[in-house]
Length: 225
Figure (cartoon, rainbow, N blue to C red):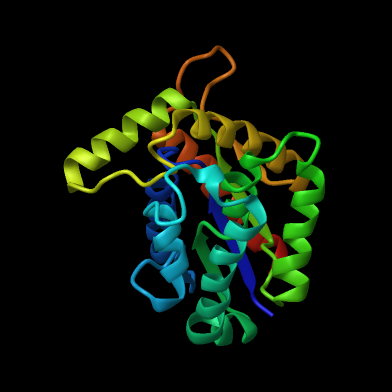
């Protein structure tokens, strides 16, 4: 089997930007890999996701419970594995993924109480990796941030691209809860946390974080041979 590295973080965490930078560095190093991004909005397998995020099942994220919504996203991943990257992975290839099952832990887990989360995290791992037989990540890079920065970046993105926020992005309480849940998921699953702030409280430089991320990935790849 191959290797699966996942990038995770709440909306506006800078995750996609760091993901793109790492992809470019791997290319320069002549490291073969295949990149995937979830959800796959252009594919039929994401139909329920688009309906959910578009508010067709309710105008608030909590109108669809964590377990049901998780299934929507899991189906898209299953289809992706079967019709896109599964063969490459099974033949030993390296996969870099922008979001994965990890996003269900963050964005659906935030609908539950802290007391309910460990059981949900364990259910999610069993559901996707054992029942649906999707690969479990070997390394998860979690981009920490703050709600204020998240919202600011999303608003700039909307202005730049002309896109509209979905029901997740419109709900500030939901975003705050997602950030808290991501912290708990990071500890529960053993993700690699990339701090947003320096020890003195100042904001870390984008390139500094990128160097740390790349070093973590390189360390893992070199250790695996």
